[in-house]
Image 1: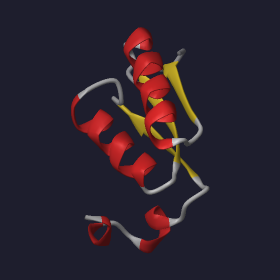
Image 2: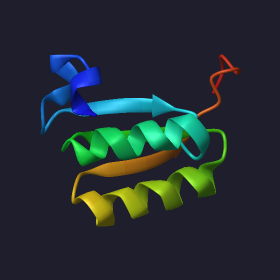
Image 3: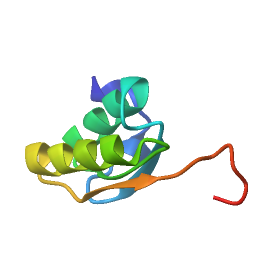
Length: 77
């Protein structure tokens, strides 16, 4: 599966920000990137979901992970 990603995404030890990461495609992307050794910042409007997902990813993949409440629809957020 890793060959579908660009070589830059396959660099373990580097980080990536994922929006909509508490569920669905965002969460699946976070899992896939963490499985490659990437640190992940999970941004979602659902803060509890983002934090729970980040904790699970950190435990499962032994990578740095943080879940934050971010509302990209709100320019003041």
